[in-house]
Picture 1 (cartoon, helix red, strand yellow):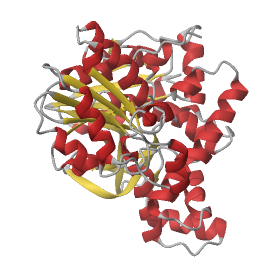
Picture 2 (tube, rainbow, N blue to C red):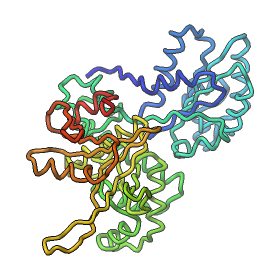
Picture 3 (cartoon, helix red, strand yellow):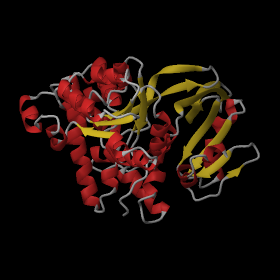
Picture 4 (spheres, helix red, strand yellow):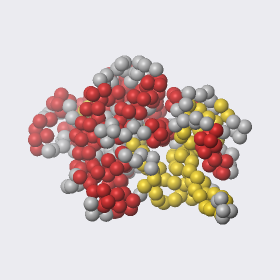
Length: 433
């Protein structure tokens, strides 16, 4: 297993953001590689671009060595549950920015700095300082973190490794690679573990010691059982339609719990705010309107999902659907679940209303794609089943079937494209061909 993981998608976004007058905030689920992106990949880019090392100031607020530089003690701060003194930090930065030219400020775990929003906003008024930050506590994992900077922040949202990024360090073929990716996910430190038992153990520890604790801490949740039960339910039903009322009923029938639908709704919001899961709304393609409920939920990282259920369920149909969803989101698409209402004649000649489903409606700028995830297309009957909803849509946007079958890309006589999931995942422009 190679150890160098390139994250060019995000690195290029940071490069484009340089000197744009905004605070660059790298967000994303914990352990997805934010610090490595900023302090290694972006730092090396600046050096290669001719920026003097003295004009790149890296500071990690959870580093004992860095804190000593400003007269702070990590141990004392943790004992007293205090944040870093902003005056000490600003004094240090002033001492480091005395020459002409642009300085790049790369700050890690910035939420540990007292009054960090005010400090960072203050640097916006200095035309010789360009600020890039990451943070990994619950507050910084909030999806609305940019509002902390009153519209003066530029977010670069980072995901765990895509399959194409995963394959840059995986040494076997893409077929074995996809099995591993669907099972253990794309958290970089997990990917770089060679032993499967180590991968499993690390995923369990991450969930128990980091992700769950962050949510409890931020939202001051006292009873731990129900939130974790909700995670287990979602883990067992990725890609299934659900809503708070339905989940409440599941709690009551299975757990004999008196949890309310409102509490379930709050917990779902907490999980989305921490980037652990993401929801997809249903959209009536014919009626051109959203259907408020139910929704589908997908996990940001399948390794975390599988660890949550102790690797007991590995239904490749739903897992593949989750992989496709994540890839489309990484490519910048807004994703909905499509509904196509139809009226058909039953065997007794009566009119019957039905709803056909399109797995994903993908919108980006003026482009739209309809995508069906089909684990396998073993015969004409199964193919017709996947094509049926497409034929009822009635517009000319591109329609694609993605299958795990090993097949070359081909269009049928109706202009519908079929491709393998390997071609889809390994070529960022695959659906536009």
